[in-house]
Image 1: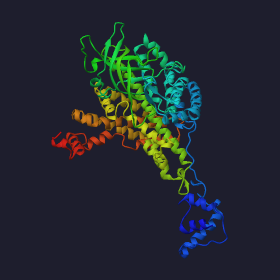
Image 2 (image 1 turned 60 degrees about the vertical axis):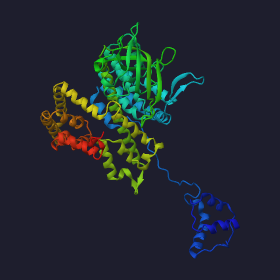
Image 3 (image 1 turned 90 degrees about the vertical axis):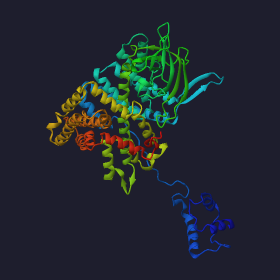
Length: 602
C-alpha cells in the first residue's frame, strides 16, 4: 500500500497515457478503503484530483485508452471493386463505338478481368512495390553472374500478362480493328494494379509492332512468336535500349554504341547503355552505328541502324552484357532499370543501314500510347479510391461526400485529374507510405520523362507540322469539326460547341501571326501550342460522346466543364507578348538574376 500511495502522491496530475507502465502498476496494486498521503504536501485541488482518479480506476474498463493504448476508432480503408463495373463512362464509350456482337464478348471479358484485378492482381502489384529488384554481381564461388533478382509477384505478373493476352490481343485481331480497343481497355483496368509491369509490356508491344512492320522473317519470326504468345512458358518481354550517357532525346548525337559485322552476317555490339528499363526482359531492340573495317562510323541520325538481340544465350548466360548497377529512382522502383556495358553482344541488324531511327519509330509511338493509358488509368484509380473513401470518412459530423466543397474538388479532378491533388482527398493518410498511395504520385512522375519530356514532345509536334507544310494541322481542324457536327444540334451543348469553334478560330489566327515572327517565337510557343491541341481535341471528344443518344447528364456536364477553360492558351500567351525576343531575354534574367552567368563569369 505504501508503494501505491507513493506513486499517487508523487503524480497528482498524472493521467492515463503519461506513463503507461505506472498506470498499469497502480491498477494491479490492492485497494484500501482510505488512503493516506504521508510525506506529500498537496493542495486541496490536487488532493481532490488524486481522489477522483482513484475512484476512476473503478470505472477503468469504460475509459478509452485505459488498456488498449491506441483507442477504439479505426478509419475504414478504401477498397477497390470491379473497376470495369464501376466505370460507367468506359461502359458507355464501348457501347457507343463497338459493334453489338463484339461489345457483348468484350464486356464479358472485361467484367471477368476486372474481378481478377481486384482478387489477385492488385495484391501482386503491392508486393512488387514492397519487394523491389536487386542485383547480384557474383555467385557463391566468385563467378560474375550479374543476376537481377526479382520477387515472385513480378514473375507472376509476367505469367498473367501472357494468360490474359495483354499483348496477344492486339496481334491476333480476333475482333478485327476492335481488338486494339479491347487491349487498351484491359490495360486501362490493369495498369494501376500492375506493380509497373506495364513498363515491360509497353516495350514488348512496341517491339512486336516494329517487327510486324518490318516483316516477320528469319530470327524475327521466332521473336514475334514469343512476344505475342499466350503461353506463360513461351512469352517474352522486350527492352528498348536507346538512352546513353548523353541522354535519350537526341539519339542522333547521343548514341556512341558501335556494331561490327561478323562473317556470318550477325553483328557484335559495343557500347554503354545508361538507362535500360525492364532489364530482366528476354530481348531488346537497340540503336548502334556500324563500324567499317577501318574503324570509321557515320555520325548523325543517318549513321544509326536498328538491332535485335537476345539478352541471354542458349546456355542462359548473358549475351556479352555486363550489368553495371541498378538505378535508384524516385518512383517505378518495381521495375529493374540498369546501366549496361555491351561488350561483343551478338545481334541482328533488322533495319536498312542508317534507317534505325525511322524503323524504331513505331516502337516509340506504341510506348507513348501506353504512357497515355497509364496516365488516364492512374487518374481514374485515385479518383475511384477517393470516391470510395469519401463514403467512409466522417469529418465535422458528416461524411466528406456530403461536403459540397469536397465534391466540387473531386468533380474538377474528374475534368482535370491530378494525382497530387487526389492524394489530398485522403488527408494525412495520402502522405503515408504504408497506404500505398504516395507510390502512385512517384510512379506517375515518370510519364513526363520516359518517352521524352513535355518540351521534347512539343518540339516533335512543331516538326511534324513543318514537315507536312501545314497539312497535319488542316487534318486536325477538319477532324475536330467533324466531331462537333452532332453536338452542334443539341441545345445543351450549343454554347460549348461555340467555345470550341472559337478556340479553333483563334488557333488559326495564331499560326498566321506567329509564322512571320521567326523560329524563336515558335519554339517559345511550342509547349502552349501542344497543350492547345490537346485541350481542343479532348473537348471535341467529350462533346462527341455527350451527343450520343444514350449519353448521361454527367457526360454533358463533363463536356461543358471542360470547354469553360481557356481552350487556346497559345493565343492568349502570344497576345500577352510572352513569345517575343524581349520575353525570351526576360525569362533568362528571371532565372539567372544575381547568378555569375549573367555577368559573363561562366
